[in-house]
Length: 245
Image 1 (tube, rainbow, N blue to C red):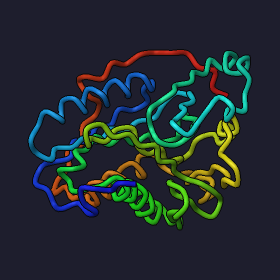
Image 2: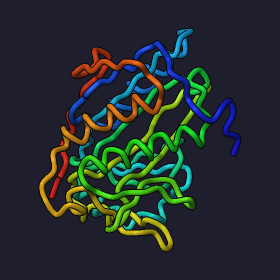
Image 3: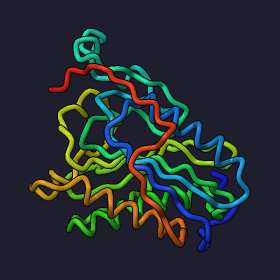
Image 4: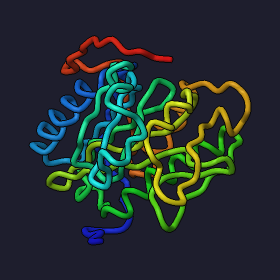
């Protein structure tokens, strides 16, 4: 894989703008990502954005996924009112539900001096840093993207890059209902899907994990400062019923 232009980010004076979106439909979050890629690509500095949210239940399928990887019938999907989105991102099939943090960085990778492999490692290492603060031992795997711990895979990485601007991103299981993960196949010889809450066997605060991730991601991308906002004025919120059980 081509990892140009560089391997490590430098300290940058531009800021990272962090937007806490709450629980939002996937389509609304995707629209906002695409709009921010367009806006930030018109700048000449290293300004970046980070969207953090949770999604109502749905399944997304990346470039390595297919309908054969879904372990559910069309009837079950309709009964749960569960949508499927086919995406131009890395990775396979993922189930998204509340309790899973969706982390979407919109970053000028070339201006930060980050190649694709180095960028993915910043995401994984920031999750490992945040896990350490929760007293959970986690690690990367040389053979596949994501973050893993004693009980299975904690975080999935599904990236996309457009004109060296990143979008899509990272999905960290904090405290979701893990039975939903059985709707999709993890792949041959893949570890089970787990969460920070299962690993600790104790309740865990999504807010504390989110705050830790923001700090570690900002530092690993080389930003001197970051600003945190609630919501975003361009976010188009929609409402959709789901059967969540």
